[in-house]
Image (cartoon, rainbow, N blue to C red; front, top):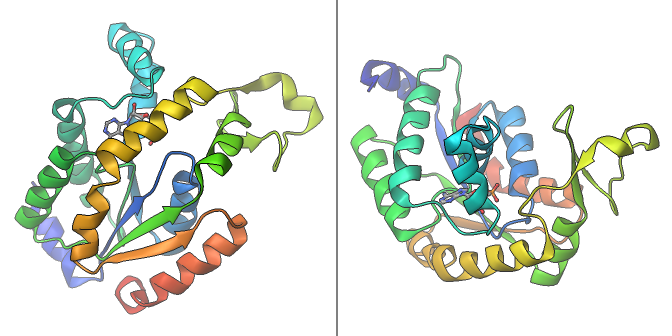
Length: 232
Ligand code: AMP
C-alpha cells in the first residue's frame, strides 16, 4: 500500500463519499456529476464487473450469467477487486477523494470496507441515500438504453436518443422487468439494512431521486457544501 502517497493526500483535503440507494435510482449519473465537479475518483463495482463481462472469455460468460439474474457476486470476488481499486485510485495525483458507487452491498462488504478504511486512516465523510419509489425505478430502468458505440446512456421516455443512432441502442441485460424486480428484492434483503449502520454514525444525507436530475444535483451540491472546505 502506498502509505506515503496517502499521507500526502491527507495533508491535502480528501473526501470519501458513498452513493447508496436502490438500482436505477440515479447513483451512476450523479456519481459522474460529483466526480467531475469535485475531482473525486469513482469506484463503481457494477462497472468493474461489466468491463470484465465484455472481455467475452470464460470469466466474462460466468459474469453475464450472474448479472442476468440480478443476484450479487460473492464478497470473495468483489472485496479484493475493491481493495485493488482503492490502492490504484489513491496513487492518482491530484485526486481529491474517493466515491463508492454500488459498494458496499452486503454486511460482509460493509465490514471489509470499514476494516480497510481504518487501516488506511480514512473516514467516510458522507453517505448519500437516494430515495425513489419502486414503480418509478421500474419505469426508468426498463426504458434505459445504451449506445453500444459510445457507451452513452439514454432513456426512451425522458432522454431519447437522436433518430440517426436509434439502431445502435442496446438494453442492459439486467434492465428487463424480471431482472430489475429481482434486483430490487436483493437490494431490500441484503443492502438496505446497512443504511441503519451508517445512520448510527450520523453521516447519512438523503437525496430525493424521484425529482429531475437538476433538482437532485442541487440537493447534492447543498449537502456537499457542508464539506466544501475539505474538497476545495
Ligand atoms: P450496478 O451497475 O451497480 O447496478 O450493478 C450491476 C450488477 O453488478 C449487480 O446487479 C450485481 O450483479 C453486480 N454488482 C455490482 N456491485 C456489486 C457488489 N458490491 N456486490 C456484489 N455484486 C455487485
